[in-house]
Image (cartoon, rainbow, N blue to C red):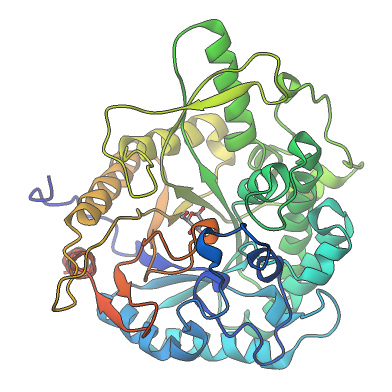
Length: 447
Ligand code: BGC
């Protein structure tokens, strides 16, 4: 499969890698950074596999020049990273901590000098703990705090950064963080978590206005999407699938693109608590791009007499990653064409802001990692993007998850997604075989 030449992508296509602050930076107590909900959650016994924390992560805060050199070697022209809110506002409000901004300022200048476009995400899950103490995303005020923080970041950096991403995967924050309690802040509120969806979206809308007022050229939001497949063609399974689709694929997109919430009546929800007149107009402020993260489809069956009307079913017949996630490249084409069909003219250009796989990468005695399965994964998914583009979907870039192995949330350091292997003891970085493959792909696309 990898022998066939890839189709030629447009010359200005963004080829990149993505990371997130808490997963790579470490240095959690340096230069005035405050605690985030993830610092707190990692200290909760049993929350993270083997009690791992992001205290050190892969020490990117100190080793970023080495990581940037790796990106330059890879030949990427785009780098999606996240700004740690608790570095900019340690208490979640008030004046900017200049030392925190300095870090991203230096990174931005060095990226630009290397010909790499910086693509920051403002919120990749590390909410300042003092804001969580006031209710976190359950509290409407957090949306306003987020906009203030966005303005501080843009006032410093928007003269050099064109495209800004507000939120990363608010679906995961609402469901894993506040609905099920398996991510920070560890609240298991089930459907009572829904106000966190609205407040994040409101935060996105308010931040969009604040970013533009502070000089940002383009604004986007990144969602994760998963084609929802019914386990059977029975009516209950079809209805369960539609319910899941509304929650996962529509809840964080319909309001942004057409100012309305999807039908959540399958959950017994007539309207989301906390929505006020005018909020949807704020949320639906025009955006310049949509970030799409894709990992796998979801298969569903009905679950009668339950607060959630569906249950997840295995998807047999596909290879799986170390996480057990099915590898289904065609699912990426499917979700991209679904978005186009669903939103039509309202859909802005798309960047694939994450796509990748965790594998049990074995390191040979000489340090090399022959991750042929990752090469197959990436090849299949990049072809899937090409298929969607051939079908008329406007995709402007592909940023793989991720540059280097890192702290994988509840799994700690157990899931390796990187193109670069990291020895978590010595912090030694070693390019995997997939790194060379991606480098050659990018070079061939440019050539
Ligand atoms: C997140 C990343 C995460 C990746 C793999 C995405 O949901 O944005 O932070 O590491 O998936 O689980």
